[in-house]
Length: 99
Image 1 (cartoon, rainbow, N blue to C red):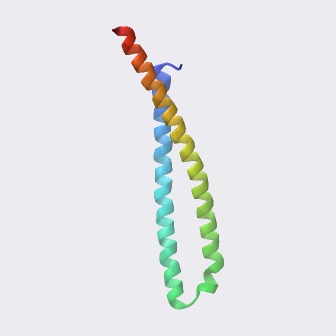
Image 2 (cartoon, rainbow, N blue to C red; image 1 turned 90 degrees about the horizontal axis):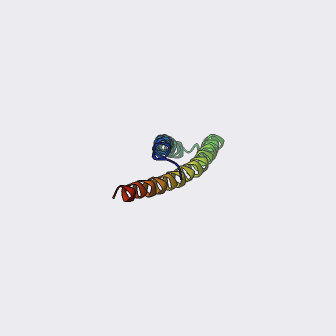
C-alpha cells in the first residue's frame, strides 16, 4: 500500500483532472447551445440544406470530444475512488496502531 503522501498527491492530481473535464463539459454545452440557436435560425430562413455539412461536421466533432471526455472522466473517477479507498484504509490502519 502506498504511503499517505503519495495518496494525497494522487488525489490532488485526479481532482485537477476532473476539474479540467468539467471545464470542457461547460465548453461543449456552450457550443451545443450556439449550434442549436444557429440551426433554429437557419430553419426559420429555410436554408437547412445550405448549412447541413457545416452543422453535421460540428456535431461529429462534438460527439468525438464527448466520447473522449467520457472515457477520461470515467478513468479519473475510478482512479480517484481507488486512491480514496487506499487513503481511507491507510488512515484507519494508522489510527488503529496509535490506539
